[in-house]
Image 1 (cartoon, rainbow, N blue to C red):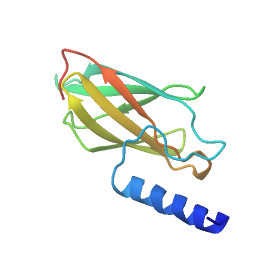
Image 2 (image 1 turned 180 degrees about the vertical axis):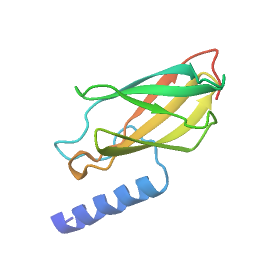
Image 3 (image 1 turned 90 degrees about the vertical axis):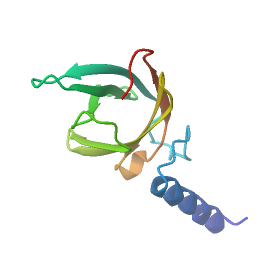
Image 4 (image 1 turned 90 degrees about the horizontal axis):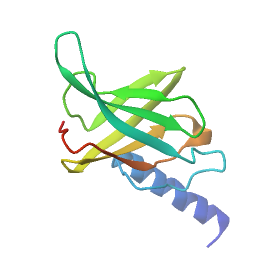
Amino acid sequence: MSSRQFILLLAVVALAGFAGGWTGSRMFPPSSAVTSITCREYHLTDAAGVRRASFIISLDDEPSLILRDRDGRRRSTLSFDENGEAFWSSLTSSSPETVNLAVHTTDPNRVAVSRCSAIHPKSRF
């Protein structure tokens, strides 16, 4: 396989992964890509008493970023802007205790998909 064919194959896999909301553990990251994503689940209650499920996400050694469900409901896609950079995620639940969160970055030098599980036995959202 030539290098041109290999690059084309990588591009097709990357596009298919993003279009399909793929939550694989790693997607052919460039050398400067995110190498670790950690998260833990916790809950906030807003002024109206609505419980909102949220995650604290750390990308490599950067400060923690906060991602929350803005309307308090479970969504397939969540989004936020922090420090001028946009992130989005795919949220799936394989059981009531485990949530898989794939975090994507719009920075072309850090395109990566990682999966982490936030385990909280008494929470469902």
